[in-house]
Amino acid sequence: MGWVEWTATLLGIAYVLLMIRRNILCWVAGNISVALQAVSFWEARLYADMLLQGVYFAMGCYGWWLWWKQSPEAKTKPIGSLRQRRTWSRLVLIWIGGSLVWAAMLRNWTNAAIPEIDAALASASLVATWMQAHRYLENWLLWIVIDSAYALVYWTRGLHLYVVLYGIFVVLAWQGWKEWNRLLDEYVAAAG
Image 1 (spheres, rainbow, N blue to C red):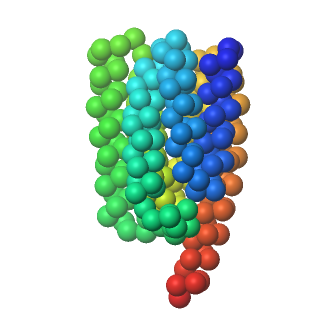
Image 2 (image 1 turned 30 degrees about the horizontal axis):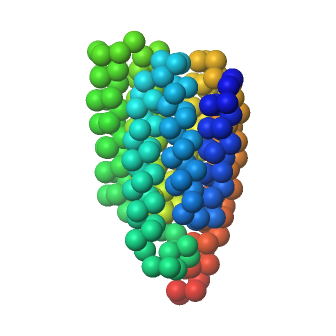
């Protein structure tokens, strides 16, 4: 475990802590972290994860732009909730479709270690990141599931520092869920 994994790990933790606080700098810390993680995943032959880091980088730029373009009060923008069955159905279809396409590409064009799992987690992560950029409360629950699964994958690939990182992410996602849920309750009470 070299400086790349250590730096990526520390910046990954900073990203989640800043996201919980809805601080726009979360996107900067996240983008540097994912760039460094891409290097580690290339070496571990987790190609969907490696490519996912590039998409995360683009999503980080999107999140930065989305939050930046809002008014100066954007930090206090209310948290939303995905309560519509239709929206959930679309997100599940995007996840399944993305997983199937990505897994087929990995199986046919790479020597990926675990293409189906890699693709499914990568696709779910994109859905969760989109939800995060739009400040939907449920992103945190999805991250708890995703990060738990990633910790197991990284254990099997010998990326032990990332196992610790993703274990920390699970705990931080739970904290994020509680904090954003509290903020949503406050917003609903103030609006009602």
